[in-house]
Length: 612
Ligand code: AGP
Image (cartoon, rainbow, N blue to C red; front, side, top):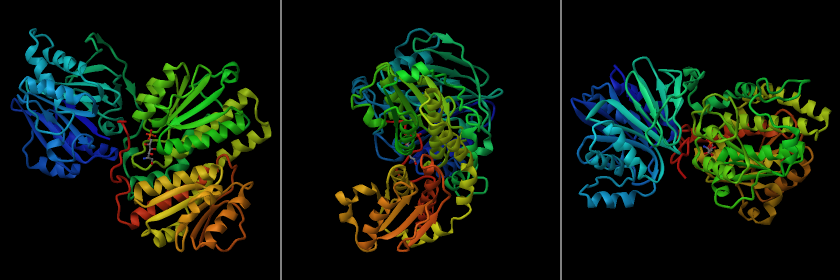
């Protein structure tokens, strides 16, 4: 959701900015633009559409400058259009800004500026920012740090969320940045510096990063960066070295990032397991130190997340309740924020977020902290906002996930939640040792079992070929199979645009079965030996009403009425979602490909949902 890039150094800024924007395309956007300072003036090139379109326009625009800011816009205020694209410039033409986030009081500020004689071209909330900077700039008497002071005065008036980059034709040697509740990182080079919404966009140039905090300002020159707090007191900041390989952000021969990420799962899971789980040893986490006393004091665990991360939380809840006997609730972050949750110092709140930048999840975490709860973040992105807010963080280490549709992050989140549940249960002594040892060995076997599923995709492709023109599909399951059904349904919706619903199989007769008629597609997941017969009866009920069925199972089923069956390796039902989700990821992928859709960048979606 909105991507920001900036460059200052000795090189031509435009190709670096365009390359950065291309790296951020996965975040989701509808228009793109850049601003540079050239011959003492701000030059802006922007348009609706893809970065490739912007690149073409730039190649004919004779742009040459060592400083620039750039942006991909995901429309919030104002339709996707050239006029609403960023960067935006003030009336005097001296200040240009790009913005990620939402300015909630922009109408109020617009009225104020209009009374002062300013006019506006766009429908955006952002356009007030460069004008406000200009207003304060002309009202500051002192000459010292006038640009920074004007930015600070303007930012002081903003309500909402923002990551901002500002350049000025009057200060062609500096870029000013500031953030609040929207991500921004600064990459340190040699005689050059970079700015971006996230780390992968800069991995080609540097591995040294400054992670900007909320309400922190940076004034960035080509060979120097100074940091200030909200009151403009200068402070020093520690650099962070990020080990990610730039190659990890390439497609490496795969047609799409999503396909690559599906195939990466054996390895990403190995990385998630790391040294946290070893046979014959107790599970260990370097990053948390929960004592028996603390774990005994917990009256409830909340797992809070959005979308796929929330689905991983559902599987985590099952593991925690089974192994630790602690009541656990899973809540959608956007609901948790406003439902007045009953949370106190005896509640542990776990927040799962691949990006670590999801606005709702971060807000839900802040709320629980205010109420005195302990907060634990599970994220894939080192140093992301959520990890800086939480009391504790554990990383999934799944490697960069670029495709909007989350695949490897989900399986890593589930693995991590289960290892965490084992860890808690080992401290609490709530689980049978033999059972835990077997579960541990099942977890260690997961990568090899996934490899088996990855090598046999022909049935799923055949099924996708048959059903890709349909308008509705239904997913059924019980227990953790229902958790996976929800994830399979979400995956299908987001990349193939086919309407789908997931139902707890036992709930079918209470309404949804009215939708089942001749030819409707129903996908059932059956992996829990205790529930096989129950779910099979429900599948039989839809077959009787003419449904076309695909069954994903690790059981030996004798029923031959199913149209398609995919057999996956057997494992403990606590972790079976990690295996059963993979055919569902492929199903969504192949259906979307058959429909000729862009699987990596589905319409209307953004990888990091940084606004409410
Ligand atoms: C997953 O396929 C989705 N794109 C989406 O549901 C995602 O999981 C959700 O937005 C949460 O993102 P996060 O993990 O980065 O917080």
